[in-house]
Structures are given as C-alpha cells and as structure tokens.
Amino acid sequence: MAHSAPAARSGGGGIVSVLAVAGIVGSLMQTLVVPLIGELPRLLSTSAANTSWVITVTLLVGAVATPVVGKLGDLYGKRRMMLICTIPLIAGSAVCAMAGSLIPMIAGRGLQGLGVGMIPLGVSALRDLLPPQRVGPAIALMSSSMGIGGALGLPISAAVAEYADWRMLFWGSTALSVLVAVLIWLLVPATPAVARGRLDIAGALGLGAALVCLLLGVSKGADWGWGSGTTLGLLAAAVVLLLCWGLFELRVRDPLVDLRVTARPQVLITNGASVLVGFAMYAQSLVLMQLLQLPEATGYGLGQSMLAAGLWMAPSGLMMMAVSSLGARLSAARGPKTSLILGALVIALGYGAALILMDWAWGLMIAGCIGSMGVGLAYGAMPALIMGAVPQAETASANSFNTLMRSIGTSVCAAVVGVVLAQMTTTLGGHILPSEAGFRTALLIGCGVALVAALVTVTLPKPRPSAEPAAAVRPEPEHLGATRAAASPAEATQPFARAPQPMPIAHQELGPWENAFRSHDERPAPEGTLRHPLPPSPAHRRPQPPPPADERSELIWLRKENAELREAHARLRAANAGLQGENAELRKELDVLMQSVSAWVKNLAER
Image (cartoon, rainbow, N blue to C red):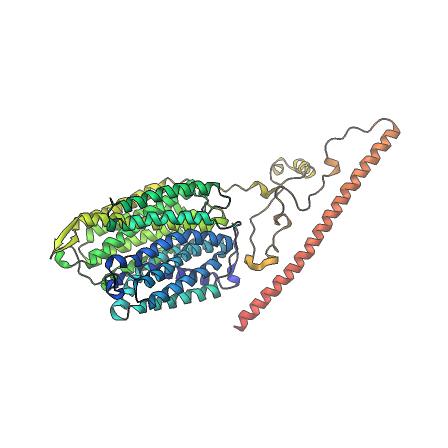
C-alpha cells in the first residue's frame, strides 16, 4: 500500500481535523430537523404525513448517492469529490433556509442528502494522505465523527429552534458547509485517481431504483400499512431489482460495485456486521430519546424537553470521540476484528444498563455513553477491515458500500422498533403511547442484535500475509542464478530482485516526478517484460556442442561464437546507455523537486 506524505503541504493533524469536521457536518444534517418535526406542518402549511418526507428524502438521496460518489472518488480523486459534495450541501441548506412551502423544503433536504457521501470519501482519503502508522487512529476519529455530529446536532438544533428563528438552523448549516469547503480546499492535498474506467451509469440507476424501493417500503411501511399493496409491491420490486442489478454488475466491464470483491469473506462478513451494528446503534437512539421526553404521568417517562433530552444524550457523542484513540490502539495491537467484537459486546452492555437504569435521566445518560463507546469501537474497526481486504483503487467505493449497509441497518431498525412500539401501547389522557413493556422489548431486541453482530464478527477469517504479486518478482538471469547457486545454496533460493512497495516521499500530485525516488526496477513497465532486459551471459547459455575436430570447422565455430558475443556486447551497451539516460532524467527531476521544496519552505517561512 502506497502512502504519501501530505505533511509537506498541511500537516497530518490538520488533514485529520478537517476531515473529522467534514464528517461531523455531514452527519449533523441528518438530525438537523428533528426538533422541528412537530412544528413543520404549521410552518409549511401542510399535513404531518407530508412533512415526514423532509426526513425521508434525505435518507433516500444519501443512500442512493453514497455508492455513486464513492466510485467517482476512486475514478477522479476523493478530495475533488468531497469538494463537489459540498456544493449541493451549501445549496440545499440555503434553499431550506428560504423555503416557505413543502416542495422547496423537500428539494433542499434532498440536496443536503448528497453531502452524506463526504463521510466515506474522507475515511478512504486517509489511506492516501497519511503515513501507515497514522491511518488507524485517524480512521477511528473520522468514523466517530458520524456519531458526534448526530449526538451534538440534536441539542444544538433544539436550542436554536426554541430560542431563535427556525431558519437560523439552515443558515447556520450553510455557513458550516462553506467553512468545510474552504478548509478542504486549503488544507487537504489532492488525492490521486487510483482507479481506471468509467462510471457505470446503468448500474447506478439500477442500484438507486432498488434502494429507493427498499428504503421507501421500510420507512413508510408503518404509515401505509405493512400489508398494503404499495408496501409489499415496493419490497418485492426491491428484491427483483437487486437481483437484476447483481447479474448486470457481474457482467459489466467497470461495475459500480465490484461484487466479486464484495463477496470476499472479510468484506462480506464485515458488511453483514455493519447492518447489525447500524441497527443496534439506532435502536438505542430511538428508545432513549422517547423515554426522556414522555410525560412523568406514564410512570416510566422522565418528562424532559427536547432541549434537555438532547443535552442528556450529548455526552454520548463526546464519548465516541474519547474512545476512538483507544479503539485505534486496540486495533493496532490485536487487530480490527477484536475491536469490532468488543464494540458489539459493549453496545449490548449499554442496552443492559438501560434496562436497569431507565427510571433516571442520569441512568439513561450512562447507558447512552456505554453504548456510544461500543459504537465508536465498532465504527472505527469496520473501515479498517474493509480497506484491509480491497485494492487501493476501490477503497472509496468499498467504504461507501459499507456506509450504505449501515444506513440500511438504521432504516430497518426504525421500522422494527416502530412496529414494536406501535403494537405495545398504553392510553394516557386519551392519547395512545408506547408502553413500558414496548420500550423494554425494543431494548432487548437491540441487545440481541448487538450480540448477533459480535457472533457474526467472530466468523471473520484470520488475516493472511499478503502474497507478493508475481509481477513484482523480476526473473533471474541464468548466469546470475548459477553464480548465486555457486556462492551459497541458501542465497540461491532468494528472489533476484524483489521490488519493494513504493514509498513516494511526496504526494502523487507531483506529476512528472512522482516516480523520482523509485528504483529502476520499480518503474512502470509492460507486464511480464523488463524495460532494459539484460542479455544472457555467454558463459552460461544453454550447453554448446564441443568444438569440431578439424581446424576449418573449428575456425567457423569460433567466428560464430565471436559474432554472438559481439551481439550480446552491443545489447549490453544499449541497455547501459538507456540506464544512463534515465539517470540523467532522474537528476533533472530531483533538481525540480528540490527547487519546489525550497520554494515551499520559503513560502512557509514568509507566512
């Protein structure tokens, strides 16, 4: 795996901080309108059923856009696509801030959903921008930013909605989006386009249609009725479309999602665990927030306002950030598989604590912090498992697909918990509310799903040492093989020239001198060939017949042998000339590089 050194431009710490802020802002958009749900019908002059689309459209657009944006990040560069994602994020926030009716609000929220793709892009970019020893902690911090944004977004949004004009929420998100775009532009180096090919437009449309049918049926099933023709038709269409899409992706030359890579045990099992962890994470959020806000007259509700409930849950988001470094150290010492298993078990422990402490607000805060610690461990481990099993040219698309799996888990969780709480109810003052038994059942379901996630993760295969590709081993000339064998039998078993992993000292945007510090053998060459193949040594060619007995025949044989030697000598001279030319080019490239570094250092000193 090749790593560059972005510190030459902005410093690794600045890169991680900027990408973490981008993740927080991206996840913040998902909880931004939660405090406004009850007021939106009045503010937009429409029904409550219609205003539910303000949340649903963001989920749908984000789910459809995430795999597409990830593939584009591999094709055209992750930093470029992150900057592109900020454009609809800024535009959508501004449209929502100026909206006075339902349609503009839904359009703006849909544009905001396109910004969700920044999160997996940022996680994948860390592999390109940081040295290997810093990738693990950075991924853990970046992954935890998703939970931080969700946890902090609720109390901030509630405070603004309660004490200021609701439009300030969206103007504030507009300003944050602009800030993220500027920070990415200034502080994040350009990332290379590591994949080749083109965007699979047909595959993107097929996957988008399948996801819309699936998530629409799951998210709206409770409103339309789980047995209604619309819900069942959407779910059936999703199954058919996914099957057709899978068959198409296996045949197309440049698939949107490489299903063969996705079918690898480590990737497949990690994605399955991601669905379960997403389910377990979201179940806790749904249950704890409702318990905090239900009236005390129910006997189990705690009577907190939206703002107070958000403040009680805010420490859980900060706990995710605090545990990210611990998870990175654990993954480095024991492997990300261990971190994912431990994270799932800690999430289950959080549900157990909620069952015991659900009578107190501080008890639910502790339970939320425990669960968030588990989510932080799990979210930091999943990208590491994915990127450890896929080629570098597919990291963004693979991470985006993993993010999609988590989104599917949260959507299914909302549907399942909604059904449980709708079926197990009680009546208070003429209002039908979820019962205490319903909440306990939902908590038990979340605990069980977290335990299943741990069991699924146990089946992950042990990482195998990566076998070096055959192209990396240069064929050994026979005369050197013979000399090596004569020198030492042990040395003869070693490869002649094994190309090391390239370690460029600067980012690949260096352009014409990006290969300046690679050895000659590491330079790109046609597969299976050498740039300057060495001629075989005359002394070690295949065995020659003995010279003939008569003098005339011997003279002819010697002349032939002399001609072959001259031809070999000419080839050696040509190869040597080529190497000398490349050496001169390398010196020129090194001069250009040093001049650029000197100019950069001078500019930095002037600043």
